[in-house]
Length: 118
Image 1 (spheres, helix red, strand yellow):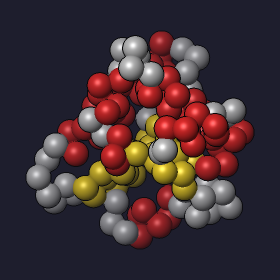
Image 2 (cartoon, helix red, strand yellow; image 1 turned 135 degrees about the vertical axis):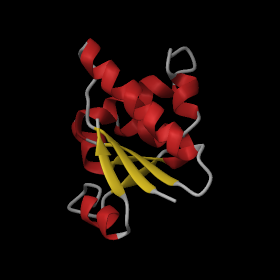
Image 3 (cartoon, helix red, strand yellow; image 1 turned 180 degrees about the horizontal axis):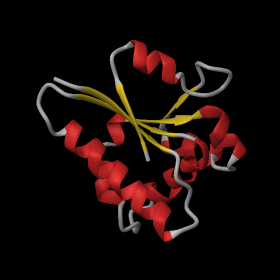
Image 4 (tube, helix red, strand yellow; image 1 turned 90 degrees about the horizontal axis):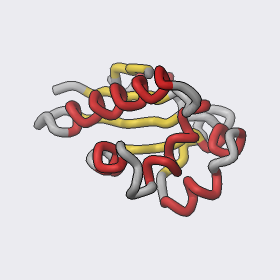
């Protein structure tokens, strides 16, 4: 049994960013589909920009995202800083603000999560 926190920091500007997103989603899906594992998928920093794109049913990665959406959260501060706060709210995705408006990575580690960043 493993607890994993997959953190997507990659923005939406390059092919490499898309690669990091897809690898992060695939990793989160693997944990979500493994009995006994627990996964948290966190979009932070520029990664918050992915949420409105992934919520779009026409997105190439929408289905992959939907497979882990119930495990998804977004940095509250960064959603505002990157202009996607309204889209995140409209999507009903949980926002995290435990550490000065940001997710608390320390709390994840303290709760036994392995933190994996993309």
